[in-house]
Image (cartoon, rainbow, N blue to C red):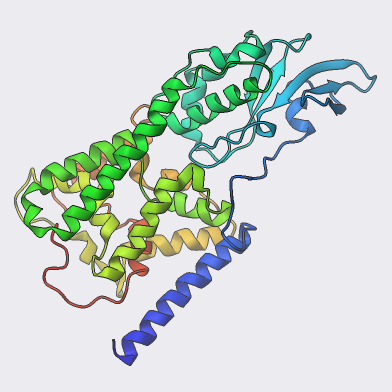
Amino acid sequence: MNKEKLLNTLYQYSLIFILLLAIAIKGGNLLFLNDESDQVSWSLEDIQKDFPKTTKLNRAANGIYTAFSKRGEPLVSFILSHEFSRTSGYGGPVPVIIFLSDDQKRVRYIRLLENNESEEFLDHILQRKLLNTWDGQKLALVGNIDCDAVTGATETSSAIINNMQNVAGQFGSLRQGQSKNMVATILNPVLFAMMLIASLIMVFARKLKGLRALYLLLITLVMGVMLHKMLSTSFLHNILISGFRWKANGLQLLLLFLAILLPFLGKKQYFCNYLCPMGALQELVAKLNPRKKFQPARFKLKGISLSEISLTLLWSAILLGFTPDLAKLEPFMFFSFRVIGWGMALFGFVIIVLSIFMNRPWCALCPTGCFLKKLEPIKTKNKHENIDK
């Protein structure tokens, strides 16, 4: 690498580091590190939403709180799940308040506390009435209730279920209801590992290029529809603000590590070309039209690509204090069919239609792809570089 390229590389990485550091400092997370002991935010106001006369709380030795009025009258007893269990969902802990009956032996109802889960997933769970599963049940037997995770919001709902079972385990429950959730807990990493191995085989074994269509279909179905494992701007932003949650996002963190490492081994745009379900779906749809397609990625405004513009706008908005719902600015939620609304469904459908006439229309705008590309070494011309395009 000559001096000019070296200086360009140093400048590129310095710029990225400064931007990431600025966002992390603004989010109060200087070192990007965060283990599973995430602080759960709750206050007296969370109890007052249901029992407005509450002015004082008292915690018994067994972990059960009692809320009192100004006159000292007991209003309700409750348990905070995060004091017994820290099972995480997609974005971290999913704590709940478990309100109890007057004799403290039954669950009256539960409420969600503040968390980092996607609003679409939470709304889907509420619509499916998962939180009503334990209403009126004996606290000591909650773990025996046969309860399935909500399809379409598996990680979030599984976290709620496991937290309830772990809490019940402290009060005499046999906790036999976890078996079905354990199947998904074991199966998902296995499927992910299989797709990861398949991607590495496709990367390094060029003779398998003829199987690419089948491979793209598997990526779309497994990584997109089944696992919802992908890199996105909202995921990267969540890391910067909240740190690395190894238990909750271990698979995606491994994905991020490989997406950064493989380009240094000469496999540029590894994630975009081999593991991104939206990229795979666009490429599959493009095969419906064998004619030469418009290349939106080549369009530049005074030398700046569309993806660079979108990435700059997002970073600028975040640094200026405007934090949009990043999950809705990218089409990755499109694969969560049971969760998304009409707006996201239309977003994904438009991309699919455009893919018939354009080469990967979303990739030309994708801020996540642009970010990962900026982390790669300076490009050298190679006519065999992107075999899938």
